Image 1 (cartoon, chains in turn purple, red):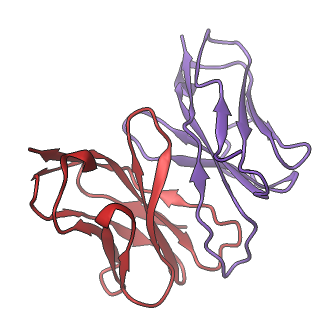
Image 2: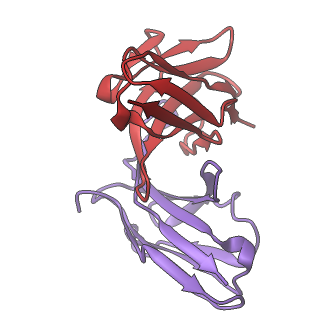
Length: 117
Length: 115
């Protein structure tokens, strides 16, 4: 597609429930990133995929959070046993492949707003 | 570790006046620096980046930023502000040798341009 697409745009769930958030990156972009943006703060890095594999998951806050990208395109962020503190906007971004000397721009989606009651 | 500081939560400026949004950074090695803008209920939009070369970088919508290595700063500027520039602005940094391109963002600065 023309841009990064994220669904759902809004998700309201109850504490303890399981949630999946989907990201469809720009066609041909091999790198995909998940960020979390809490109210009044800047985006915080969660996980980065290069192709199908998670190249860096150091930002995932705990083992309730997991992400997959099985075919190297669409990615799903999965949150188990949601807590009120998980409420935030989850942002997905993609970029084309680059090496250490490159600086391709990350293109962000509009985000998925998660509210845990 | 890399970090970004945006010391001002909000900047107020009158339309037509010049604006500056401040950013300082910390990173090992050469920095790659970015500015993004966020409008309500929308994703971050890229404004400009500094990789190497001329310290003054020009970007979208008339914005520019000046890289100052000695002060580790990358302030965003515009000669004449528009009401439509009102938004949330984020500075971001990554190390030049970071192959993963993971950006670290500042906390954001809200720009309010009044008519």
